Length: 209
Length: 209
Image (cartoon, rainbow over all chains, first blue to last red; front, side, top):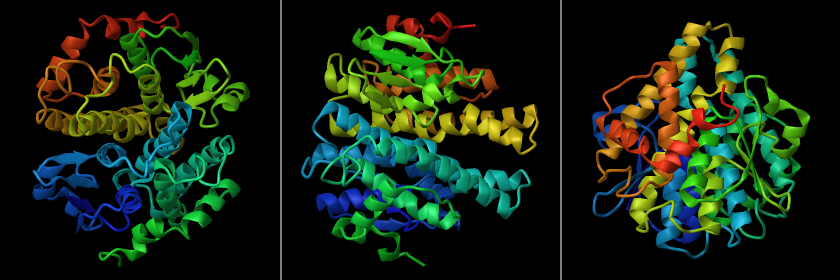
């Protein structure tokens, strides 16, 4: 399998965590987002959305959307599980992942920030847009996480929620989004000691700059 | 169970389709988005994101994020299934749903459009932003759907992909987003004859205006 990604793409990073948690080896192929390589015809032929990540299976089948790919990996290799066993806890884990993947990440992503610049907003305004989006999202995330037992988002092992939350925190730092998030900070501290999260870190990738 | 929603909220509409497909009866409680009822303290106590839908279980447990709730309903009542059985087809169904739920809907949603207005953009510019977002997303969706056998998004029965696609088409019409989408049009035509999709339609809800 080939994971088409980029070291700093937080959606690609989620999948690096999932792959590391499950011990699945893939070939990694980097596409430089800042240079627009995701809009080259060869990449658009893979994913017409022009977005990373893409998982290319050995038979050439192309999978898009990071959370769908994460669940695919969980379907084909159930151990260790990426979701809790109990339906309500599964729903909470998916909801935390989707809070980030739907309501934070796409709104502070390159594509939207570039559109804001095209509308005439300067760098400071664009950074404020991103920071506000991240802060509001993580404020709500912190409240929701306060309802669930830790130490991870949902209990005593990392799930799809943690794999989505931890990369988003790098974007929070990058855009200067800050808040009072003790539960999130404790999860970040735990991830900072976990081999799968360390292996998946942006700075540990071959294409890191 | 109580479904907190709004007739025109496409994320609530997805769940109305899923509930109708599965024949699960719930109490519906409407929160008027245009009047800002989703930002009232009583609603924020349910969902700190201030977003619809919310599914409130009989024991008071609160579930957020429409796709996570859809999968919860599939977990507790597997028939009829909301996803194909085969892992690759499951990934494709989830990816279509997420293309819409992550990369179209939140970027053309009230919260972002209000923020654009606060930045000084007029109604026409805001509508153009929404229409461009929807058109680009559905262009990519059409290409992806062309890879999968119909007549629904993934085969011969509706899945989470169709439940997410059909409501988004109402927003496409509302914002004047148009494109060459024959595969999508055929799915819309099929949905227009399907009892679950008819029952879930915005215009069929008690709070419709």
